[in-house]
Image 1: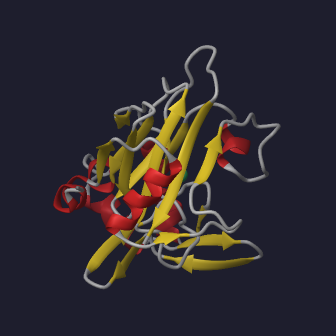
Image 2: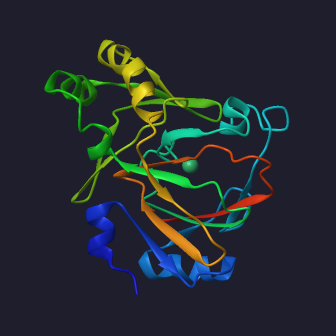
Length: 214
Ligand SMILES: [Fe+2]
C-alpha cells in the first residue's frame, strides 16, 4: 500500500517487493494510469551506453557512462508526466539521485527566485518547439520542470539564471536511491528531480526499468 501523502510531501517513496516489470506495472496502476512509450511498451528498460553508442542528444550522448545531472522527465510535454516509477537491477552499486525543487533552491535568494519565476524556455519536441515557463499548473497542483540540456533560455531572466541552474543540478548533496532486485521508487516528477550517480569501478550491467504514470 502506497502512502500517497508521504509521496506528496517528500517527493518520492520507495516500495519493497517489486521484483519484475509486471510488479512495477501493477504498482503504477495503484496510483494512476500507466502511459505507453512511443514504441508501444509500458515499462522501458534503460541501460548504460557510452557516448559513442548513444542516440544523438540523449543524456548518454552528453555524459557517456558518467553521472547525469538532476532533471525532470518529459519537460518537452505540455504537462510533464506526474509520476516516474523506477526499479533497478543487475550491478546496483550506482544509485539514482533525487532532490526536491524546494531543496535545490534552498540557498537561492529572492532575486534568483524572481528571475526563475519570470524565466521563459524554449523546448524542442521532435521537429517542433514550444516556449514554456518552468512552473505549470494542473488542476489544483503546481509543478516545476527543469532539464538544463533540453530547455534553452529564451528571455533575459532565463539567460541570467541558466549558468547557476546548471551548477545547482550538478550538486552532489542529493538523496540516493539504492537499488536491489526487489525495490522500486515512485518519484513525483512535478516536485522532485532525479539523476544518475557516479559510475563505480568495473561496473557490470545495470538496468533501470521505468514506467510513466499520470
Ligand atoms: Fe530521467
